[in-house]
Image (tube, rainbow, N blue to C red; front, top):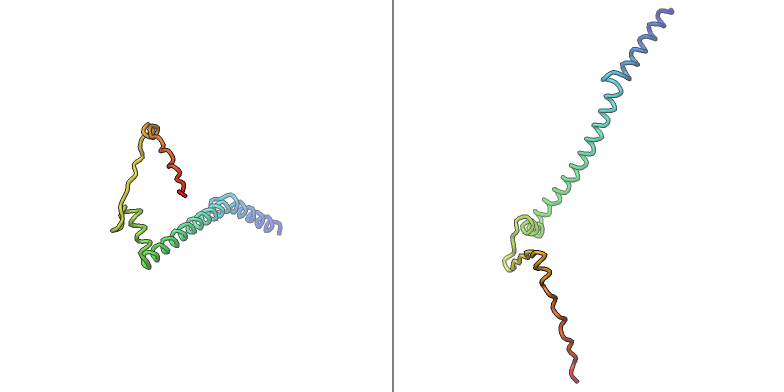
Length: 111
């Protein structure tokens, strides 16, 4: 009976060693949990992106406002009755030479 108890104790110790210190044990479990948490975060970010893209597709299908906005911002297009003005920033030297205009004269009403 002592031999059986000793053998069972030895088997228990070997299984515990394998559980805690082998590559198939608890350390792999922790790594897998970390990997699944990371994957869940990536999935949430991609789901949010998909929701935004779906909303944009819905806007493009339903009206011309989103389509016009995309054409203006991404392609630089303008409307038929619009005039395009491009403002080119000057150098700092040019900005220093510009003098401000005097205020307009104050007109009083004649009596």
